[in-house]
Image (tube, rainbow, N blue to C red):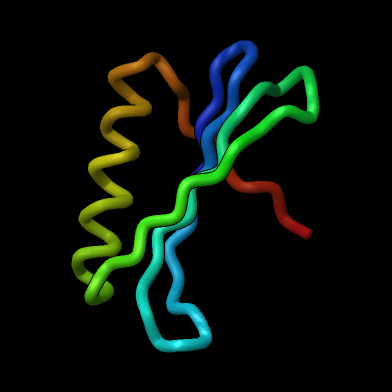
Length: 73
């Protein structure tokens, strides 16, 4: 999921890593510079990872972010 405001971005990815752990990776930062940060959350199962991603997305909505389609390619 990708979210933006006029000057900020926030991207949430959920996947299973090579050790079969479920992780939620959040990349965020400025849309005008290359400055950015990353948060990684390790969770015990897929259901927990999807729930955490939804919780993060809801915070983004409350902070005025708009969800946009992910770029293909």
